Length: 364
Image 1 (cartoon, rainbow, N blue to C red):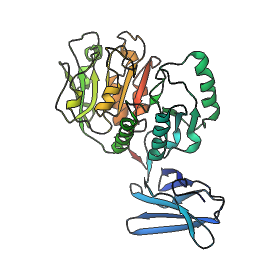
Image 2: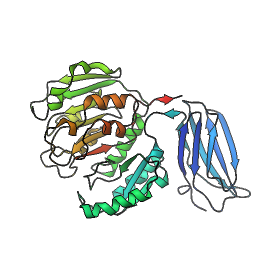
Image 3: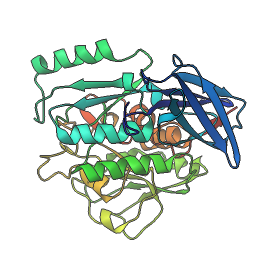
């Protein structure tokens, strides 16, 4: 009989007045008990030993329910899962069952991050693909091709995006769960989850710095979209400055420097994003004089983007502030919003918690 650490709820997918709960199969069990509750109301459903998925219906949209599954023998409960919380209702944006997770079995940090993310976001086990990667910054075409073929073969067709649970290799067009160490990545994941549905209000800062080339996004930004034209949640400001400091309302920070000062002096709400238009910000571990975007993550941001090769100062290779703010504040996830804000993504890398959704909407 497995321990409680081994018997898990694999997935809990909320929908319109329902939740689909899926759990591990215990060969020795003669049946299962699905227990769920809302406040003081507790409900118990007995299920046969062949059932490992059940749709609980008749729930209240917008309410948070507690779920637990117990495996039973003839007379006793043998083992039970941990209790999970699920908010009911069909929500906007990418869902956990639509996200694939890649893990590098040659990297203990990758294994630790992937397991933490699987548990925190309830990523289905069939959406997780294990790879054996060298711990190098870049892969050759010959190294990359068989890995891609394996992912294409094993990943379910329902998966719409990938999260990569490692920091190197970094020259990839996906969102990476990356940081300077495992604790920073776990904190990043926690911030993404904490942001969901919080509907924050604050500011977007588009910086026109003393570096005129790297400030090209500020120079071409349409003044009509300043203020709260894009979203009532976000006050878009164009500042003639190299940095901001001592603030608590930064939701978006679009920089125009090769290295950004004062980022540790601010406090950032969960879900906040930042990036700078510079040459090697996406070279996470060896960016030289160009600040690595991992510095934004270390400072408390939930997402960032940087390039790994010479992009020139072409705005189409970096996030468009208008589109990023529009998509994110309308209830799309971080990975959807960032991806849709960049016309040419092939030279860049995203770092962040892909499913972060601060302006998540419930759909009736």
